[in-house]
Amino acid sequence: MRGRAMVEKFKRILAKEEYCMGCRLCEVHCVVQHSKSKNILKVFKGEEPRPVSGICFEERGPTSFALQCRHCEDAPCIEACISGAMYRDPVTSKILNNRSKCVGCWMCIMVCPYGVIKPDHEEKKVASKCDLCIDAGFPACVEHCPNEALVLVDYMGKKVSKEGLTDGK
Image: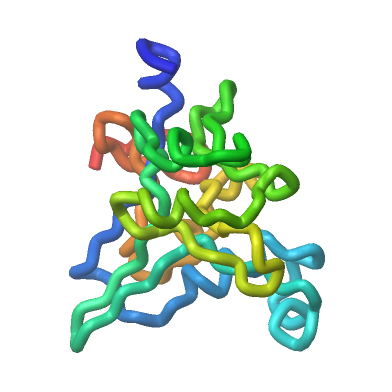
């Protein structure tokens, strides 16, 4: 998808490592958002199956930050997917994974330039990746980040709030 429609829909999460304090609430709320119950206590007190976080958390010394799928315009994961499980949603332009089509070859993991697609060892065949919380309408990691170390931005790099407004930052 190219052109104006792609530009209007294109959003991604940016990590500001200078604001990340390493609390990992982004991972916690990602798991909760993708769980059946959407209840933080139930999810971490035994709900099965517990979803795999779509966030890759990096930490070295005092520096930490969360990485998510960049929903690349020329997504190598889509090209490498042998089953057609990885695809670009025609409405939202997000790169999504159809878990029922995934055969677990993990080619998407090998070709991702950001290293943000993870194997789901529970199901042993399905990769887990950020879907920008497509069902909720706004990424849970961004919404619950206490320091605003994660921000949703549009194609111009302007911050997008939960209400969908850009504030020019």
